[in-house]
Length: 253
Image 1 (cartoon, rainbow, N blue to C red):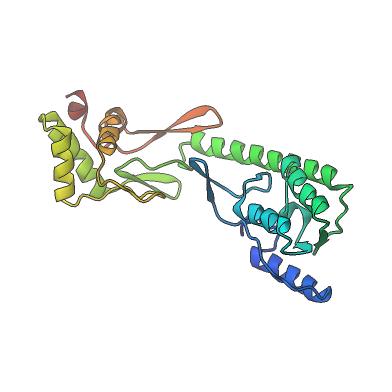
Image 2: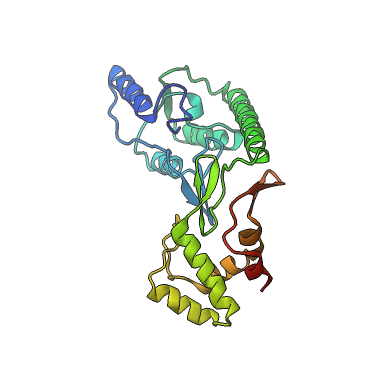
């Protein structure tokens, strides 16, 4: 689990407890499997939830088990291995197929009770997600920023969305060029020549100032002029007021 999810025990503390358990049972630690960071699943980044079966470290553990790399799995608690029925079945199949022992630092492992515990853990997780979603909805309903990509020209600062002056300058310039009939390719070349900054991204940019980035800014003319930020959460859309960057006259043009 991550630091904020851990039950008063960070991943480092959990590993320390497991290593002490290995010493107690005279076992040699051959590998440590940690899923603590976001990872890419198909086309998007996801959190390493215990309900997921595609966690990179879990997949490595299962592959190493098949290759006979170890005889025992040590875990802090059972829900560090899985928190859902699908993930549980995957792990229990590996345990049974490869005749593995399981030792837990804070609990006693009983494969007969595993389905019940996995179901309860999954229900607890769903309940937690529901409470978190309700909390987020309440915040955005009150006009407070929470999640979502910052539009070019803006930046989240705590619960507010503020204008980022350096980017806002180029927003105005892009609309000015466009309204003066400068072609998109020429606008792109001018931005690159001026070394205009681009919004940071979790994925490295392959193209500097792609045409689609410029079209995205121009396509948000209404939001830039009227000062709105729309956030969606669990199928609902919420409008957060922000400071406009372009004038109403520019928008009409």
